[in-house]
Amino acid sequence: MTRRVGFLLLAGLAALVLLISAGIFVGFGGSRGIPGTAPHEPQTSAAPAVSGQWVGTWSAAAASAEPGTQDGYGQMSIRNVVHTSVGGSSARIRLSNLYGTRPLAISHASLALSEGSGSPIATAGTMHRITFGGKPSVTLPAGGEITSDPVLLAVPGNADLLVTTYSPAPSGPATYHPYARQTSYLARGDRTEDPAGTAYTEQSPYWRYLTGVDVFSTQAHGAVVAIGDSITDGITSTPGANHRWTDFLADRLRNEPGAPRYGVLNAGISGNRLLTDSNRLSPTNGPSLLSRLDRDALSRTGVKAVVVEIGVNDLFKAPRQLDAQKIVAGMREVVRRAHAHGLRVTGSTLTPFGGHRGYSRQLNAVREQVNHVIRSGTVYDEVVDFDRTLRDPVHPLRLRPAYDSGDHLHPSDTGYRAMADAVDVDHLRQAAPAAL
Picture 1 (cartoon, rainbow, N blue to C red):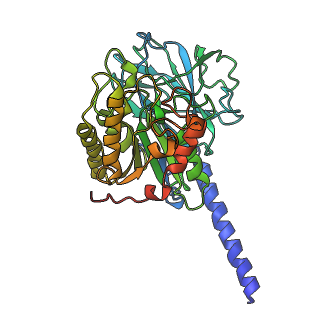
Picture 2: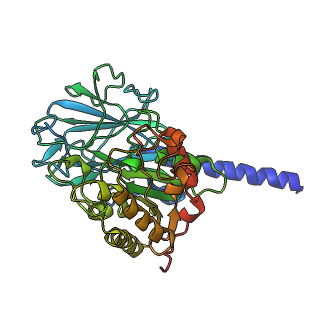
Picture 3: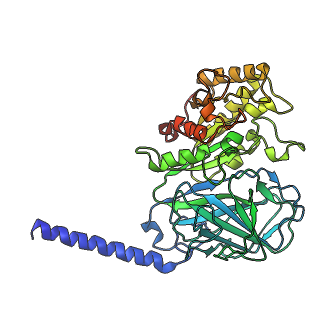
């Protein structure tokens, strides 16, 4: 037998094996036979043939109960629009009734690809019903959350998904994320699997009930969670453009040669503090980062690394924390808890805010004390110096003009891109905690 003939025979056998494997996998349909399904779902002999894992592709931190929603959204369809960071062959969603005071009944839910950027119209052939434990409906108790069954849907990275839920009856205050920087939609009645989107006449700047989307991926190897305040939330980024610094980081991790192929999960909450929970005067600021660290970061699907950006609001908001050592101690507690989960932490310096209405020499002095300790290398495993990245070389207490959104505190889109470029992505792949 010649070498060429032998090669052709081997190639033919390989192609035959692939065809048979694909036929077995597709033949089961639905969520049955999808690798990585929940324990209650039957596995098939095809599952081991496909290697991969569940990773987070999108997240939003539940901030509070939405004001004015004592009865929730009975007989309303809520179509949340979210943007993926990595793709996969199937997806599942996480719903939360964290701030609800009554059980939340979801009788119908769906998942689809958006036809256009941010459009409520579904791409033809992509609308799928979502089930929970094999059932089309679920009831979340007050304070509860749930992860759905997998949906067999090819999800691209860098794409918009439509996640729609329908509640048939009043359910109490809605758990929401108020500063989405993305338009979502509402419709009267059960329009959950309506692909046309014409019934979705009411627009909304919020995400409701939805706190996460995971994908089953053979390309991504995990996820990095960015947890912080309004700067991580991207409060001044262009709405609908996905120009938060975490979005620019996701671009790097998808496309940059040698970068780890991780999903990027945004756990920012505008107004959030490291040490202090929100109060009745600012309820949407969420629980302190220390209070929500496990829920919003350490327990996320496939998390491999954590980036922390926090501290300025501890200076700004009453009761003010003006003891730099207490702020640093809180940061070290974040690292200690992350290490207990086998995760390294990249932490940022506190960014400049000269010219902002809340600026004072006293507050800036505390900021610089905290930054000095962070830069010493005794707080975080790695440091990303967002202060140095964003500050004006001529007036270092202020943001560089091109990076200033105009309020002298939050970055512009260009500033958010500079933040993402400042992250050393090689550090994100190092799993073993460093000894500090």
